[in-house]
Image (cartoon, rainbow, N blue to C red; front, side, top):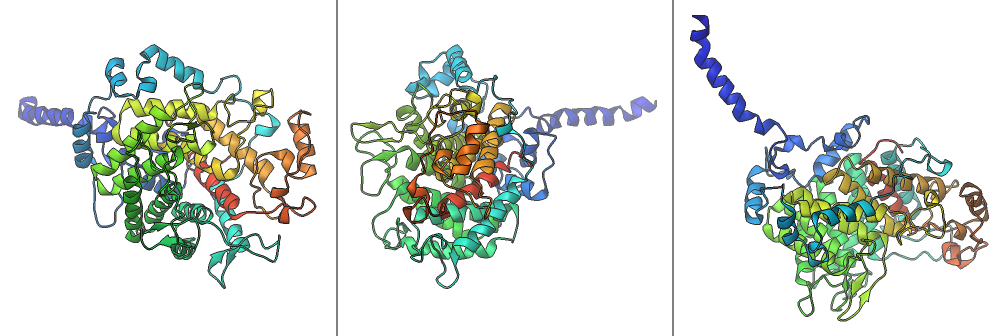
Length: 525
């Protein structure tokens, strides 16, 4: 009697439970799940690490599938993402190798499923050196977020001039203190914005001052930024793309929509500089035909970040078009790194760490937004290329793999740190091999490039170019005698190796960004 009395209730409750199962599990496609499932994405990276509230807030702000606009309350991203998935036909994330192949550029479209797996396997960091804990790779027990904030405080004291409201060159080097190009100021602004999210209100005044300083570079005719305060047509599109990304981060830190609107203006300018005469790509410099990977991938990244707030399909399409062009045109199949750029007829085959870093950021965002396995595979390929010690961005003169580190100055490497961090956050949170290499490189920078005198960082990673003491210690720790001590005059004050090593605004800001980005995947290095 009792059972029959409650049978309708039990039946309907069980039916309701069945309906709710997909909404509370990972059964839904990644891009259609409620936002709350993404707020703690970083716990998948290392569930033993305790992140503070600021880190959680930072990751929620950075995730391209969450919305934090102050004027819009969004419970989930379901509606916008559903429309996008329908237009891109990406609801089925378990594509067959043949359907995936049809969506890949020709550089990979001829690969079978087995050969794609082989490419990923060969690009992956060798398991023989991933878990090493040699003396040059041991934990140093510092909080990378706090280190990044400390660097910014010291940067401000060293370079900012209150009387003129601008950054000047190192005051310890010369009485003739010069101003900086827009690239230096932009990276500094980006670092401060990163820190403001992690340490709310501590850097808001700095952010406003540097934003005002950036306006001294703005070309009023085009509403974008010149390389110098001449405000002329000496305009580099990679600079402007990075400014757009920096403004988006500032918006995320402050909810000041001026930053977002400025970023949208810049990205519209970038998209208007897509090449139509040859085969595509974003121009490196305004009114010049060279198409660069850095300007194209930075433009893609800025557009994808704007798409998050506007839901405008144009920005998503532009970001995908940029990355399809890079991977079709400038991906070196021999090592999966990215070439510098291309003229009408000639490819510049130079490779720097920020080429692969920004490309990795963009493909990770695309994977996160669209759910397409195509972008996940590209992200894996690029991340493995960036962390394989046999490639051109490592010091390959050293025969031992465990002694090799990235060979680019910090001004290039900061974007590789960002790319790897975003790959771990948005594309493959459990790729411990890549994470270990990221932390290893951060330890190297802290150990070798931080000055004991003032806590600031040198710009070069070539240890034989710095002081005799650093070189002597390097020879012992790295167990090598293949290098000669060869101090670089450009690293020293006034070009004189008898003077102290100079500090630069760009290298210092880049170091801050390196540790702030590293803090997104670990609390201790």
